[in-house]
Length: 371
Ligand SMILES: Cc1ncc(COP(=O)(O)O)c(C=O)c1O
Image (cartoon, rainbow, N blue to C red; front, side):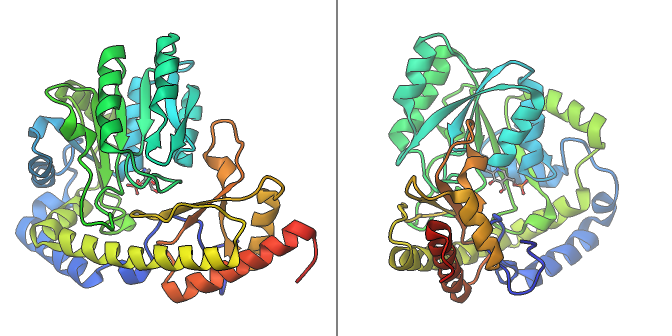
């Protein structure tokens, strides 16, 4: 279903709906960016990013400036890191399921992917440890610890510590992709693994302003050891010269003016309502589906009984102008009976209608009868 066609409801894309973007605050930040540092905002910047924003990020995470690089969105940061650290034939551990675009990037590099199951409290570390002990030590482990894409699950703090120990003992880096950590519904942000590693450089932390301010800015960042940042910066310079300075200057002014806190709070509040409505309607109208009610982030992972063909279901849903993504896209082995439902892009009153369409599509794909 094309998202542009009329009356389409999309549970497919991980984007905030337009009403969640604080355009007024962005307009003020843009004006300030141009008035205060018009020259800096309008030129080619440094390949590592706009210095005032790098400083702001470094301070926020309590790290030195040399450890921060700003990119055109966090997917670009992930791509640069993966290209720098993984080559053809290298073993890379990923969550099963994991973010589809990261899997595509890894496949493009020719990495060998090893999926580690996701439990309700995140990565199955016993399974990972068995692999490590058997000699399967990855070049890198890619994880989304908070409100994971696609399952919505969060890695427990006990597991965060154990994962760091495993990485230190077996000598592999962790790519911590964390665009959703601030979007918690329970009032507390889980500590990043970056902040939990003591004096080590095991963790490469990636995050973004896409999910808390707006995706159109295309501003993300990576925090890593200065030596790796140097290599990534060189790769960036040779690929795109420098990330978009203008957008970074706007983000900087937006953050200085307190916009990040208010925008995050607004998006968080809306997401909590949307997640609750989606979960309530699913429980009523798709009783055969199993899911954990999300406590943050953008996604609900709906598992359906084996006898339901989810690809067929997705087609039937598209015919009813509802876009959903099949779980198979998020699997290393392409096998899943799940659907990823994003509630971020749909206002609550439309979510109920979306679930109605899904239930209708399900009744058709189940017994081939048009209800
Ligand atoms: C886990 C994860 N990483 C990275 C991204 C990309 O975000 P950005 O817009 O910052 O490139 C997304 C967006 O959906 C995501 O879910």
